Length: 113
Length: 111
Image (cartoon, rainbow over all chains, first blue to last red; front, top):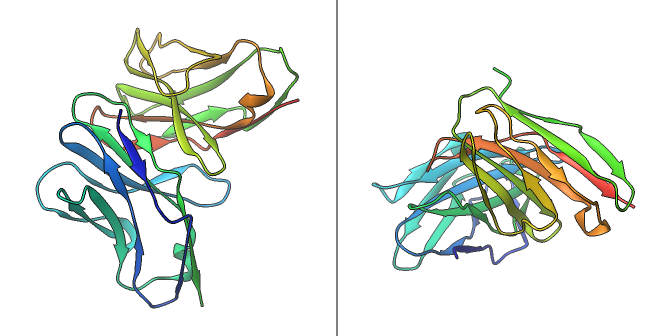
């Protein structure tokens, strides 16, 4: 079955600095890849997805992610972090041939002023 | 357009009790799913449905039942609640192969 690894439980960055939240995946065949964000006591909000095509995907709130097939990675990035970006971030993978979406354990991003 | 709605927001059950968590969506999505979220474990798929009358098991289906009689509704039933089912439950919907939209969650405590 497919799986996702988010190797960092916690990422801390200063406001204005670039941020990266890492994600690697394992799936048979080509993947659909997603990033979601969760604010306290809220449901998950969709940020961006990779389905096919350009490896660099741009999403909401200035976030982007790069699909790297050889490294089976889909890291989330933002050039300049905001304090309001502080939240829990989840990477998810789904194979093309079914709807079984699997999530990583999540990475808590803290952006300090 | 309300999106994905879930009721109740909070629930406390005693061991052995049964209950149904309600989920509804008004976006005409064919795909609906239930997840549970536990600290340090991310979201784990319980059951999902690709259309009315069709359901399938996810990663952690034991102790839960689902049915899908309409496109809009996808209730999750706990048959005999156990403390291990204490969790936050999220319902989601989407088009097949696309991103999912999540409800606000139900926080369940089983004592």
